[in-house]
Length: 304
Image (cartoon, rainbow, N blue to C red; front, side, top):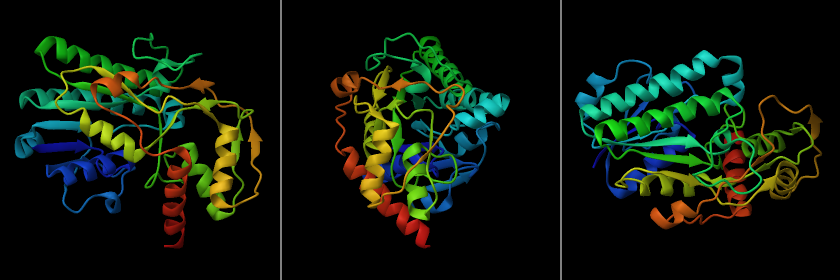
C-alpha cells in the first residue's frame, strides 16, 4: 500500500515506519523535525519536511496515500500547560487538516491518542467505554482530535481508527527532550545525574514497549473504525520503575523527590482486552526486557 505516516521521524512514528517497511509498503513521512530526528527515519521511507498545521492538500495529491498513520502531535504535558494554544493548534487543527486531506483521497486514518491523559483517574484498568475526564490541556486536545475522527466516520462513513496508547517507552525516546519517565530515569543513570521523582512516587502507570505499540498500530489498518486501548493492563509505580531502572543500569544511585506536578493523575492503567480480541494485540516484551533494550540504546547514544 501507499502509506503516509505523520510524525514518522519521531519516537513512536519511526517504529511504525519500520514495521510498515518490513510489510513491504511504500512509505512516505511528513515531519517538521520539531522533535523528530532524521537519524530515526528508515532509509526506505521518503521524508517530506512539513508542519501538519500547514495546508496538506498538495502533498496528499502528490503522495496519494491509501492509508494515513497520524502520529504527529504535541505530546509534552508540560508544554501543553505552558503553551495551550500551541498544543491545540497541533493536536486539534493539525488533526483536522489530516482528516480533511485524507477524506479527499478516501484514505483510512489511524489516529494515535492517549489513554491516561484522556481517562483521568481510574480505580480499575480503564476500558474504552469509560467516560473521558482529562485533567490536562494535552488530554483535552487529544480527546478533541478523537471527536473529529468519530465525526468524520459518522459524516462520511469512513473507517478511521483511534488507538489510545499507555506510557510508551523504548529505544529512540530522547531522555533530554519530550521524554517519558523511563527515558528520563535511564538517561540520568547513564550520565551520572540524579533522577527526580515528582510527588511520593506511588503514581501508577501502564508501561508498554514501543515495538509492541508499533505492531498494534499497524494491525489496526483495515479495521472498520473503533477505539482501542494499547497497553499491558499492568500498573507499575514510579518508585518501582526507578528501582527496576537501577537494576537494569547496575546502579545504587538514589533519586530525589520534588513536589507533584499540576495536572498529573495518580493512577493510569489501560484494559487492552478489546485490542486483544479485535486486533490480535498481545504485548510480547516484558518490562525488564524492554528496559534492557532501552538502556542499551541510551548507552550507545551517550557514547556517540
